[in-house]
Amino acid sequence: MNILFIGGTGVISRACTQACLERGDKVFLLNRGESPNAIPPECHHFQADIQQVEHVNALMKDHHFDCVVDWIAYTPAHIERESALFRGKTDQYIFISSASIYAKPPRLPIQETHPIHNPYWEYAHNKILCEQTLQRMDDEEAFPFTIVRPSHTYDATKIPLRGGVTSLQRLLTGKPVIVHGDGTTLWTLTHHRDFAQGFVGLLGHPEALGQTYHITSDEVLTWNQIYHIMAQTAGVEAHLFHLASETILQYDKEWGDGLLGDKAHNMVFDNSKIKQLNPSYEAQIPFAQGAREILDWYQSDSSHQRIDLNLDTLMDQIIRDRTG
Image 1: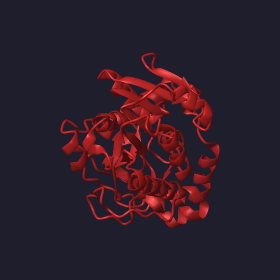
Image 2 (image 1 turned 180 degrees about the vertical axis):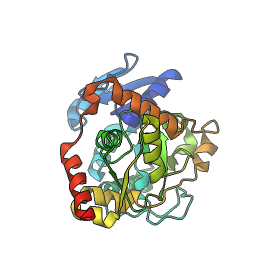
Image 3 (image 1 turned 60 degrees about the vertical axis):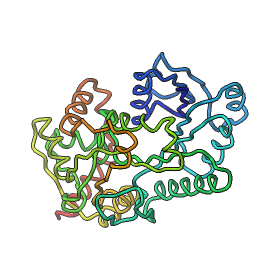
């Protein structure tokens, strides 16, 4: 197939780009070419800013794609712009939404029909508005869309701990790390290569039009387990400092909003819908393996070990305040 990725060099999209290339698709990437992640030489690259509509229109003039995947749309305005650019130039437009949009607390396991509502987190709220915009377009003009809702998808560079490298380094040096609640909330981490194997089955599939899918691992862990697995992989002991999400919100709005709107709730997914469309999909990479990849990446270069000093200082302050 001829596939266009708007973006294509991020954590999730990079793995999907590779999966498409491996199965023989012709992959085009449209981006500014400013990502530190290299564009695979097998890809056809349109170097452009998607906001420069006239330039993009000129580049797309003689092209038609079996599928266009938008990895970087976050607001309804983005959806309106992209739909105008690619209407009539693709048989399928895939919007990457987010599983954070599901109403909380959810009934487990979460299915795609679960109500969507997230008043805490602006990112999730905007994704909801994007989905509603696509539904309206479909009602008005049969726009050929598919919606995908990833949950917490990671790779070796996107460490699924608060602040990434900052919390990892605290673990490695024996400093306490802050974990919301009592750490027993159920959570789903999905390795980006696993996500890609589920995702490619949607591309160009006529039954996916007008449909919504989440794609996650079936491995379920508590946040305590996530931190302990990471520490065990590094051969250290995890010192966890548990704190209510509402208290964290008092210190850091962005951190607190992300907890109350998402991570402070049990999130376990029913993947039967994607497996019906893509029967070969089965997540294979447990977090124990992912943690090993993370540690290898961290130790491979000193530039990978730069922490967020502000977050590190904030964690120290919060712990001091709460321990007297």
